Image 1 (cartoon, rainbow over the protein chains, first blue to last red):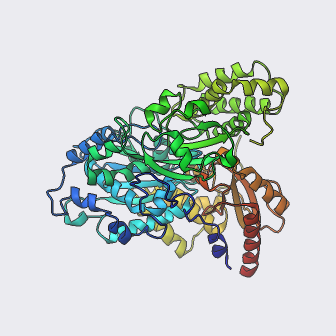
Image 2: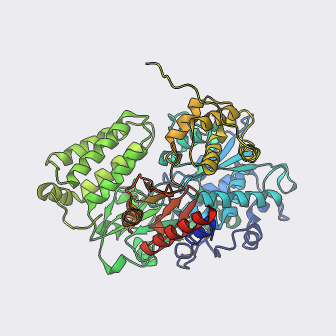
Length: 450
Length: 175
């Protein structure tokens, strides 16, 4: 075997994580098997019908850009990358009459620990994202777009490029799409290892060929984005939700979830569960149902804590998360964030001090260094948690951690500082006794490696 | 303090490499060639294993940007190799979701198996082992990345051994 053949043996097939048949009313991953990612199969699943519909190429009258945005607003689709901003509202911020070039950008720089959904969407259903972007470009009058893909998933980048070639050849991308006046050029761009580029303005800097250091906002990308031009940036899964929403109407999408939390959402469940993987379920599905889909807590152990929306969201103890539904409002009410929908499960054998130490190391490593509170503060956080974990903690360290976190939050250009501080505060709030025990006894309450 | 390092002589790239660069440059507006710098650097790294000052200068000249702006990119992003490494760079994720599913054990297994510590290269120059941050494949844990472009999923100790044996055999065949 040559090197390529050796490596192919270990490539993920998506069988365990995506094609397990344990989704509930899936829209985005429905009918996928790993081999049917191409254009013909996508069309057979109803693909590009929404694009034909809005362009009036399905025998109908077509839809105006305003009507497309109205559907997205009615659907209550909210940004799936983490912030949960209403997508229709974001689209309406784009200056329609702007005379120069405008850009559309897809944020596939999926690096928030726990999150692995966009990777499978792009690998197994790339045309869904392409169609969603083409619809968005039509709605906002944008003729050029880029999909910024996490550098570590290079095979996904190559798959997306192959899908772009198919879409261009079939006339779904490029000049005068399906014979109309609408033109849209779409390209793939890859990162190369920088968590910060998931932040939208850092991503724009990176797309311009620079260090990925976030920009001050305002001005917001809608007025000053890529190359200084009006730009809209949405997450991969947000675009992937759009074709179904257009085909079935904003109301139908909203009805999949609950008011203010429309549609379905892909949750990446990782950590101490029997079947880690991606699960697409309607918004507002109970956490208990999601945990059940993922096979329950591993080895029949008891649930200790859940980080519900990627590593930046505060951990919730079992009793709180078990009464939550998986939507923006419920998780926020419980004191955390739905974020990217990355659900990291920890069982009762886990040490929260060690878990926090690993996360704090990550934020220190990935701070871009631009703002002093984050650059220095993330190092402080890690060093304090590290010394507690090495049995050298001091009684005043918990107050110090809280103080450092407090002094990072709200004092930086982007949200990475907050993202580093929030897990610290969440851990100390809900698992204070573990930290106190560690400081007093110089060892954890449990003897786990994490 | 004056920097005594003389400027590097720009590397001359072959036609196939230049064609790959051109494909990337074509994605961006004609006055924004710099946008292709990340892709061009990763192409050079794939072909040569690392980014020498000469390579950075060569890319800078082609894209019409200062070499320092190229160097900023090389040093900012984690995956660019600023020095020659082993034939196979192995990046094992040990971030929290992976740590909960034997990511750390996978790294330790490779350390024992290869007889090196993380950050080191084996004496035969075949393997460089690195600890890595989130690769974005948390449900596949333990995961590792080989030479930036190949993700390996569900890497139990048995599979890690198969991988190492397989790569060793393939490298021997190549030589």
